[in-house]
Image 1: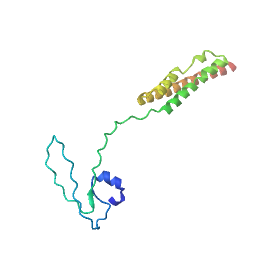
Image 2: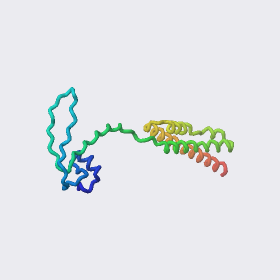
Image 3: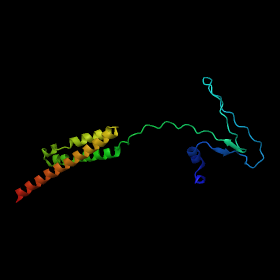
Image 4: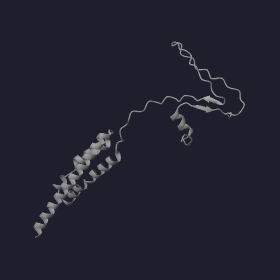
Length: 166
C-alpha cells in the first residue's frame, strides 16, 4: 500500500528514509563518501557517531523539520446571524404597541417587549460565544412570552367585544 501514497505523505509519516539520487542505481557512478555530520557544540564533547555506508546511488534524506506547537483550541464562533434574527423579531414585536397607539388604545400601547429588545442588543454586541448563546435564548424566550401575552390580550378583547354585541 505504500506505493499508493504520495511522496510527501510518505515522507512525513515514515520519517527520513534512503532516497535515490538523480543517477539511476545501475549506472556506473563512483561510490560517494558518507556526508560528514555537523560538529557538536563546543560546550558538549561527544564521541563521533559511526555512520553506516550509504549504498551506491542513494543518499540520506533530510530529517523533517519539527512540528510547530499547536494553537490553543478556539471556541466556536459567535452566532451573530442568529443574534441579528432574534433582535429583528424582537423589534418586529414593537408593531403591536404601535398599532394600539394608532387605533386609540394607549393603555395597550404600553405593552412593549423591552427585555427581548435589550437581550437581542446584548447578543449582537457581545463577542463571547457563551454570552451570545445565552442572550439569544433569552431574546427568543422574551419574544415568545410577549407573543403569548399579546394573544391573551387580543383574545380577551375579542371576548369582551362579542359579549357587548350579543
